[in-house]
Image (cartoon, rainbow, N blue to C red; front, side, top):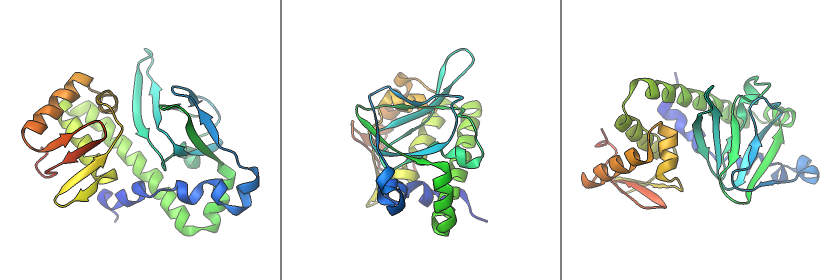
Length: 226
């Protein structure tokens, strides 16, 4: 049985380097990049799900709207990550929206049928993508459970620990997370407020558990985050 911690590897794999059609000989001649301005939507809920997308440059927010119009942010992805992958799991129409967060965000699309052919030809690629889809579903389930049953402090700390496992780099006994996420971004991802994130980050800093600035978060003691 494969446990969740052993799956983090697949989330960190830069599938863009493998999948981007301009790197795949057969698709090179007919491939173009799509560029989006800040806050432009890449797709909306209920649109046909015919492609997956890879981020060549910039950041993309994935989310949906509640019945009262409130926005719920599921994830914020950056260069090298893919989104729209639920089309591979049978999603015919998008349940979420995808929105560019930076000026001149560059997106590399790949048609689902073309991707299925690549997966058929490359078992290792197929394995990585299926694990990625499975992991994201598991993470979404954990997030929903956290929003329902856990307090704000616990949600923020779990976000730090998950991000460290996902994208962190070990520096001695510490873990550095290079991030462009603002406190408001983290608040949106954890279902809290910007003020709450700032307060808890400062408390953790006072306890010498983390240090942070606009470009990075350094976790000085992962085990000590409780």
